[in-house]
Amino acid sequence: MSATCGNIGSVLLIEVVRVSEAVTRTPARLGKIGHLAELLGRVGPDEAEIAISYLSGELPQRQVGVGWRTLEDLPQPKLAATATLTTVDALLSKIKAVSGQGSQAARKALVSELFAGLTSQEQQFMRRLLHGELRQGALDGVMIEAVAKASGAPSPDVRRALTLRGWLPAVGAAALAGGASALREFKLEVGRAVAPMLASSAPNVAAALQKAGTPAALEWKIDGIRVQGHRSGSDVRVFTRTLDDITPQVPELAEALLRLPSDDLVLDGEVIALRPDGRPHPFQVTAGRASSRTNVAALREDTPLTVFFFDALRVDGTDLLDLPYTDRQEVLARTVPAELLTPRLVTDDVRAAEHFFAEAVRAGHEGLVVKSMAAPYAAGRRGAGWIKVKPRHTLDLVVLAAEWGHGRREGKLSNLHLGARDPGGGYVMLGKTFKGLTDELLAWQTTRFLELAEGPTDGWTVRLRPELVVEIAFDGVQRSPRYPGGMALRFARVLRYRPDKRPDQADTVDTVRSLML
DNA sequence: TTCCGACAGTGGGGTCGCAAT
DNA sequence: ATTGCGACCCCACTATCGGAA
Image 1 (cartoon, rainbow, N blue to C red):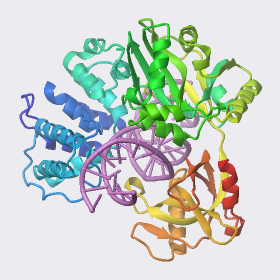
Image 2 (cartoon, chains in turn blue, red, purple):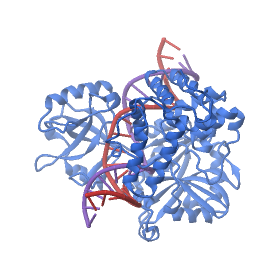
Image 3 (cartoon, rainbow, N blue to C red):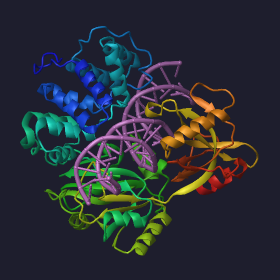
């Protein structure tokens, strides 16, 4: 069924779209991997990056400045599928270039040109891709296995190269061209971001210790922005968790790196805005400061950033990723002055660990990250090496409305509008949540909500008589410019419904306000 | 045979920069 | 001056597959 395979620039977009559709139809992961690997086996070298990128749900250009609004009215589709991967890719690069320098009209024209060259099947695919919602049940995790299968290289080797390179299409193309030996060419490179190691979570300190094994290292979880600092001589770069370069936004960090005794290093840490008394500002303050690109010099006077390092990936030109945590810590401790190190305790005692947790929270931080002593720096996976623990607050709130869900939640009322009781009468909305719902609960609440529906609907939101009380877990209360009470819940999720409670027994806005302080 | 690790999906609040209004 | 959009900072949780135990 394929067209001319192997010829340069010959792979059609429709071939990739058909594979994506087959992947969507196939629930089994191994089946998905099979479909993807089959395509990878027949793409030319200059198309491999594009195909891998599209089929793992991202664009080679990363973002091109096109969102849902730009995709609202599109031209009529073509009947014949003639677009090739390379021509589509070239147009997207043009769109990105235009987005970078003004004129929405010019961008819109190019987007129209792109879509006018696609069949309706291709248009749908491209829309989902641009939205970042491919929804085919395969992203990087599955694509890694597909690359391994198609290239014959072991999947740990593919994963390892991805860690070091940070971009799967490049790794996949190299593997397809040169197999396992090509993957060994990927090395840690100072100045190029490494995929950061991530943490899984546990409900409490004891559970985290059990997962990590004892003794374990406990570190304060700082509520700021994750940063990876690179230094080569006097050249410094700082990357975020998604590998974006934010060097100009965080001069304090660049200066801190330049003061260190090693001039060839890669360190992992967190930046946060601290008040003069050393306590953390709310996350919003740190996020605003770290994402400001204008007037940085003035902003840093008012809102200085502090860095806390917690890991060393390379020091004095030596790569440390494969060393156990304890060895990396040793190097970190003799490279970084104590005041720039994340507070840390090694223990096998649950009581001591819980005390340290309470101390971190009392100091205004998020909680702890519990780390296994032997774990290497295994980037990109949320394994058992690092486990975060945070305190959990709960409130009994009233469901004010619900929104229809998408994808696997299509036809289900999914997203809840949550209100606290106003002692003066009525309810004050504090935000929404869709988290914590099982399929069973989703089905139940859809039926129940439709019985309680009242008032006007915009076709998307169903307003309810305020009768249902639901117990909500959340991480904290933040200032809100959006909601009427000036407050919103951070990371709200459903724990359970409270059929035993009437709405007049729900928590009040005053209770919520007292939690914001 | 059961258990559990890893993945993908489903969306949340907030902020900044920029273009259009 | 204000508003809308896109991008990105933080993220929790459930369902599912398939290898580990």
